[in-house]
Length: 235
Length: 271
Image: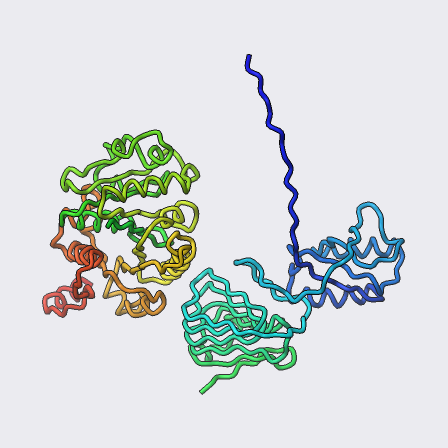
């Protein structure tokens, strides 16, 4: 008879540092949820896979209202991972745990493939320009929230550029561009040959379907004027 | 110094297997030792196109997993004695292939062949990624139409990121093989022109293979066109592509643009 000896299992504990988005509800809560809904209408499911922390320092609500807030957010596909600075009465089973010691950070680039425009505008103290001297191939994502992106080449259909500042494409633009994710005003999109699938600055976007057919193939500049994207044909 | 070449495309049905067989045969006819490897596990076709489907005993998975020696699995072509085939399994699926297993097989092939040509499956999943992983060079097969071009662009992006070559920091040598080219449809604007495709993909052109009924006939006979009908237009185009792959400078002919009075007369009548 053979004896089976199972090896001693060792548990490995690892630490991981994540970036979480902080939502700061204000009173009255129903109005704040209304404003959130308006934002989500433009970018639905934005928070769906992102960790969210609620900052409760300035919120003076009762336990029941707080529990309703958490479930209202869950209905909007916002899962609250933790809370900061709650009043002592706002803790209980099934509610998000309290965390302390969170640091405010500038948004760092996400791993390749993730494209996440920043939820709240963060003030950048240092901007850098990313210059890419090659074509951006279909399926590739360029993510540079710290500043401008310049592509000396074409951006293929199915490729994506996400920049904190402006985007300049010295070639044919056939993919998607999302500029101004850092929240800095004045971000623009420039391209030499416009055949883009999507142009977006800040939160305002226009898809290929809604673009004026006369800009097709032309050199253009897109910028945000108020809440709208304005496109201007260059030369 | 042996070369591992991957024939890939992204899109299915553009002519990877046909091109692997035709170019492999053409290179072997010049005396080079060539092994063509079918990476399309579960949907193998390279053995059919080479007429070796009744001789497959052991396959790539058997060798990768150590169940058989490479010598037992290699099938020597009966017509060109420097051409060998390593077939894929038909009953297993792609998950049976591992990085380490494939690396061992490729390294062993390198030691006895001048050219190892890997026929990639379609798509961008495991099979396609494994076929390109250990390659030194790539032939990107594209049809001159929009979906094929976009898929090829995607594959080029993967060649520049998911291969050992890319991970080492080298730029993989990629060349475009434009297949099923039809000058008439291109002139009518139904298909992209050579210039359009090159503009989007921006890699050097290896060859232009015209749409040809001879290719299907050759497949049915189990002999690649460079073996069976090398003097046909498609056969000569593949032959030229093979010579360019071997480093020769061969002037590029765009099929269908040779102005020939007979062609024009009969062309119109036939339409």
